[in-house]
Image (cartoon, rainbow, N blue to C red):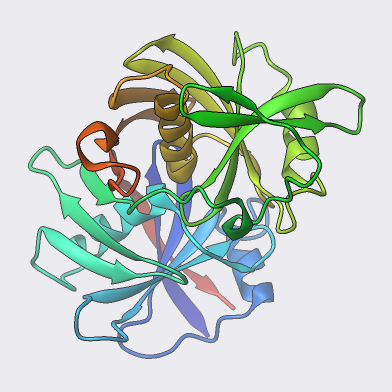
Length: 289
């Protein structure tokens, strides 16, 4: 059989998008891995699937699969922006605001007049057991209104990370020069640290000013990507609670700029995080399976 697909990218985070609104697709881990393979397939960080809504209060079901492992994952903010561009460009909806359900969440996606997309990423999660993160025996350093947790890495160095979830787990480490930092060495050590039972996305944050940062993220199962939407949200939320950042921040990733807003001063810790950034179609095609 032949499978139609659309290749999209959001700040350099790239996706294969599939339309399953007219019927179920024969998806399995092997097929997802083939689509994600950059040499023998299409190539993508994640494979996104558009499915009919499972309940009347949402417009679509939004499924996300890791392109390297084929496993379904909880959340992808950059993918969410591409999702709303896809359903508009393919005539699946005429709405500028689209509500979707994911594996463990519901999101509101808003197409802006300039073509960028704002995603309501919901409220961050700070309960450690929900990441999950095992803090037993650790003594955190309290900075501002948040905690930095000491982690001993396999290479013997100790780092201090902020731990939170944006629907998927994140550990945020502040560094002085993110471009020079050895993400390829430290990233996998944090990602697979035994205190994170389901592993974790490792973010490396350089604060340029209270309204501007640079960020690199070593993602679970994917390695370093050009951008990570949930990672940008997690880094900004952590930076705000730690007293480093204002409530609206431009995040410069290697793939582009994302704007993150978290109005917690007015709304408290349950304030929703808003992420705005680009989403573009790269090409469309067909692959034989």
